[in-house]
Length: 316
Length: 264
Image (cartoon, rainbow over all chains, first blue to last red; front, side, top):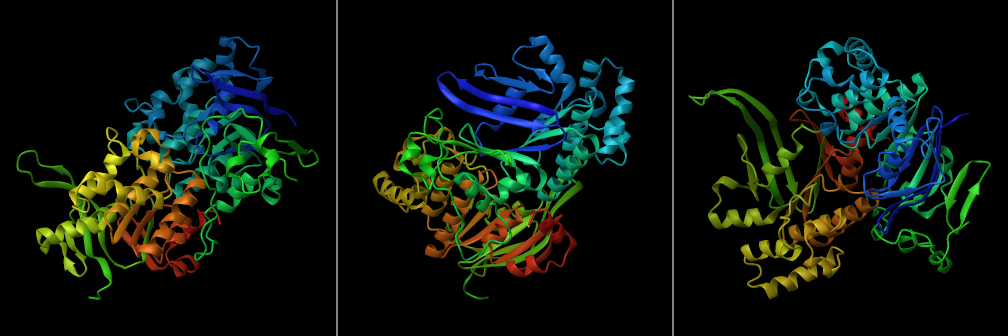
C-alpha cells in the first residue's frame, strides 16, 4: 500500500518552548487516520506542519515530511503552494468564519478550483453542483444562490466538505469537523466522511478530542499528549489492547450510556503541562497512577511490529 | 404544593418578536422558542434537559433562573409565583438560583482578578461584611472545589478552561444556592477535565443537597447526572421520565435518534 503522508521526528518550537516533540506518523492511502488528544496537545500544529501552514514565529525541524508524494522539506515555496492547493483539502472546526459571509456560495466555492486547476467559473459551477448533490443537498442550485449565513451549521459544514473535494484531493484534513455541531448532525456529517472515503478512495486525517468518534470512524489512530504521540496503531488493536496508561484512561472516560450512575466517573487528576515538554522522562509522569521512579528520567519507545502498534511507556 | 419542590414551571411559553411595524409597533413576526413547558425540580434532585441547539433548552434554564420573563405561564419558587414575591423574597430567590455557563471565561469580567469576581456576590448579598470575611469564605470554597489558592490573584484569561469552570462553580456555591442551572458546563472542556467537573458537581450535590438543572446536548453526560430527563425538540418537551426509563425504552423517534447518535 502507498503512503499519503509520512512524517518523521517532527519538532515544533516557539522560541525556547517546545510545542511538539518528536512526532512521527504514517497515513496510508485510502484510510481514515484519527489524531486524538486534548486541547493544546499539538494535534492541529502537527497537521499544519504536514501542509506547510504553520503560523509565523514557530520554528520546526523534521527528518522527513512527505505529503501526497512530495517532499515538503526540499520543495520551494511556490512548488509547495501549488502542490498543497491541488492535492489537499482542509475542513475547519469553525464553519462560520471559513466561508466569506458577504459572498454567495456559488461565487466562492470554486475559487480554489479555478486558481489551481485553471478552469472557468462555469466549469467550476458544474462541478460544485455535482459535489453539493453528493454531500447530501437535494437541490444544489438553490444552495449555490444562498449566502453562508442563510445555512445552518450542518449545511455549512457540508458546503465546506464539497469545497474541499473540488480539486479531487488525495488527502482531506478535517480539524475537529463536528465539534461545533449537534450530536444528530454530527452523525450525519461523519457518515458522509465515511462514504467519501469509501467511494473516492481518499485519505482523511481526522483530528478530534472525541475518542468515541475516532473509535467509530477511523482505521488507525495516534494519541497525542503534551506534544508527543504516546501511542499509535490500528484502531482495533489500540482499543482492544491499549498500552499507554493515558490511552487506557481515555478509553474508560468516554461518557457512554453504560456507566453505572452510582459510581463516580474515572478521572485523570491534574492538568496538562504547558511547559517542559522536551524532558527526557515521560510527559504523563505527574498524572500517571502507575508511574514508577524510572519514568522521571527516561521513557522507552516500544513497538509491537506484528500489529504495527507503537507506544511510549516503561511499563509492559 | 409539596414543600420540597424548589422551582416549578407552569406552562411556560416564550416568544421573541422578530419583526415589528416600524411605526405602530404592531408585531408582524414572532419566533416561539418554548411552546409550553412544565416541570418540577425537587430538592437535591437533578433534572436533565437534552436536545439539539435551537430546541429551547437554554431558554428554559434562563426563565427558571429569572434571567428572562416568560411570555405566558409562571415560575413558582417554593410554591409561590415569583412575580408576587416581595422585594426581599425576590432577592432571596435570585440568590438561591445560580448559573454555571459553558463559556465560564466569557461569564467573568476580564478586567477583574478571580478574587474580585468571587467576592462581589458575597458583598452584594451581605453574606460577608468586608473583604477579610469574604476572603475567608473564598479560601474555603476554592479548596473545596479543588483549586490552588494562588488562583485568587490571577485574571480569568490566565487560567485554563477547567480551572475557570471550577472558579465558576465556586462563585455559584458561595451564596449557598438551592438550585444551580448548569448550561452545557462541560461541553467546552477536555474529556479528562470533563470527568473531574462532573464528579465534583455530583459530590457537592450529595453534601449540600443542591438541585441541578443540567442542560446538555450530550445524552451520555445528561444520563449520568440526572434523575429525570426532559427531551426537547423545537420548543416542545417531546419526552420525559426517569433517566433510566427514557434511555432504555425511548418512545419518541427523536429520542431514539439522539441515543443512537451517542455511539453506544
